[in-house]
Amino acid sequence: MNTILKLCNVSKSYKQGLTKIEVIKSSSFEIKRGERVAFVGPSGCGKTTLLQICGLLDAPNFGEIYIENQKVNKLSDSKKTQIRKNKLGFVYQFHHLLPEFSAVENVMLPLFIQGISHEEALKKAKEILTGLGLKRRLEHRPSELSGGEQQRVALARAIIGNPSLILADEPTGNLDPENANIVFKLLLDVVKEYN
Image (cartoon, rainbow, N blue to C red; front, side, top):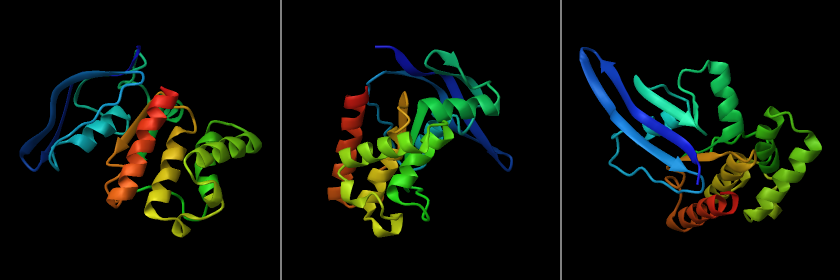
């Protein structure tokens, strides 16, 4: 298995007035292709900050980040954006779907950013949404979908560009237990299917 993500001695702290708050202290780990890893801890311990650092949405104060063996934390913002666009998929606790677009249009958006044609993006979005059990909901707007359906659309949007790594920050946190189990199982199935 090859390494997708590697953090070496990553630290992150913030200043609050005169107080320095250490959120992450000298963390090192690596994640290999096909692995499923969970960061578990109490609220406020730094899980979201760590995920944001892994996703190049925040920068560590110290340490190094590698994505597919490329050192990325010192790259320019535009190069980090390219890596996020081509190698990373994000699923958040709140689905962040655009309300004016249908389910299928929300899922197509990352492919448009990658320069994929409308026809190809539509075909791929329909396939993924159908695979996630949303064939009859393709043209529904987010407000017309249940919480579980919205999160499945968000998952489809995260995986449509074939990312090397999916980062999920409490993706089932706003769902009832039944829908949480469905979304969690789908997330695990996606990792298994796409490695």
